Image: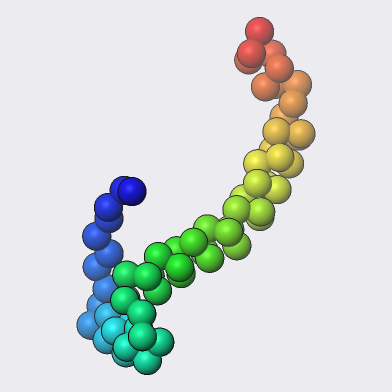
Length: 66
C-alpha cells in the first residue's frame, strides 16, 4: 500500500476526528473511504471527456501513431 500524508486545517482535522470517534472508526479509514468515493465519482466524467476528445481528434491521433 502506498503511504501518503494528508495535511488538514485544524477545523477539518477536528471534524474528522469527531466523526471518526462518533463512528468508532479510525480517522484514517474515514479519509481513505472519502478518497475512494471521490475517485469513483470523478472517474466517469473524466473518462467521458477523454473519450470525446479521442473521438473528435481520432484522425490526428491515427496520423501521429503512424
